[in-house]
Length: 304
Image (cartoon, rainbow, N blue to C red; front, side, top):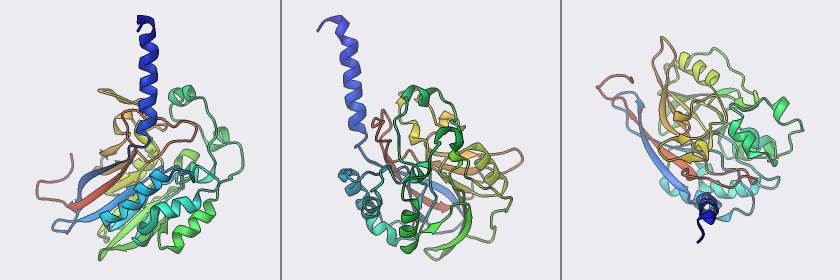
């Protein structure tokens, strides 16, 4: 091969790998010591950013298999849809998981169908802009149909709501917000319920205003998605962007979040299961669901 063609061949190979990686579904597992000391574990399945279209049969089959994990709770942090006719596919994919106690919030791609965008703008756009500047159109996806289907199966709608859910004999308290990326979130000053076995904050996009409020309000665990884990990651560097004001180092996985004068909260950010139909690539960032095993806090002390 001529030396001048080497960069072209390398770019083609990278692109082919990036496309193939969108179908390399991965289950991540983490342990979070967040329950009262002596508690028996709870298994929480975190799903996010499925971005489903009707023809994504491999993704649907993989998702159906997650019911074999027998989680105690499912937390869905939004962006389920990527097609006007995707609701039946989403429900079929989640399958028996809809019979497990669950909570959900929505993301922008539960409201608005995906459109073609300049990828350079995504990579250089920082935190993005509000819905008024980014999506100047009517909400066209069947989010009300999806909401009704979830709630009819027993999942609890947390969009700008508080709720209590009994999970494996424990009372869990939740606060949720509608999509912060669209500036749909409505935050209040209500403190976490200290009498509950655990209080959890649930959002689609992990904007700092949301994380800060919930940390100050005493939520020990916060769960979000939206970032796609960066979607394009560079080895030894990490995510290129987060598409919000969260730092790149916390684009996916389990970390902590702390405001001055308050104990830290655990923060779990899902790398998500899908991509926009117009940007079907991932690099060093496989699509994922996460099984969190919540355990009792041991005697070693609080988080640093």
